[in-house]
Length: 262
Image (tube, rainbow, N blue to C red; front, top):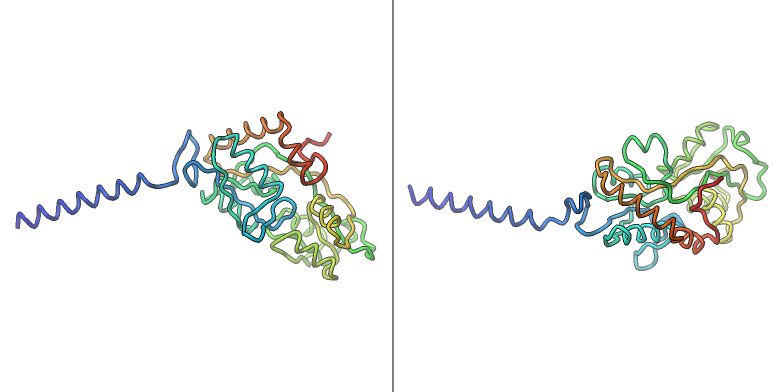
């Protein structure tokens, strides 16, 4: 009986040691006060469906303005950039749960999102705009009363559309919504004016109408990750001061969208 008990205790001890070794090998944890999804990496999520902010190439790798900004931030912090493609509508929840360290996905700062995540200082400025086909008589938001408006899932544009209609169609991507509009579907699309401008430049037969305000886009970080938020803000300030943000912006847009509008 004593031998059996001794054997049992030995097995429990070994199991405990193995568990301890396993815990040492976890990739997540605290680093320099930052809570990271993977040790040594800045794991950021974006959709890969929001050209030119993020687009997925044939190898499954994402490129674009948001990607370049995220990689520049990671470099300033001293972490390896680790991109993750995720549906836009679920990215904030992924940050909140700790699946991602941050969302660098052109999220507009608003009160609803601020209930779930914290935001960095803005890294670019934009605003929603109405887009229609060239043969449309629509000029402003009031003209869309009761008509069909397409927007991207999880965006702030649905609330704007709800001011004038219940007939709202949701897409996974703003670009897909604009393509559908150009192909004769829906009465209008509400999206970021820069996205619409790029789509027109790429050959889509659509036109921009009323600009519906200005917005600030920022990096989303989990509420309890204060050290990472501080380091991201410091990185953005450095990138703003040394001209890197401006350089990245001009690379994709031919103008500086990172400067705060006066």
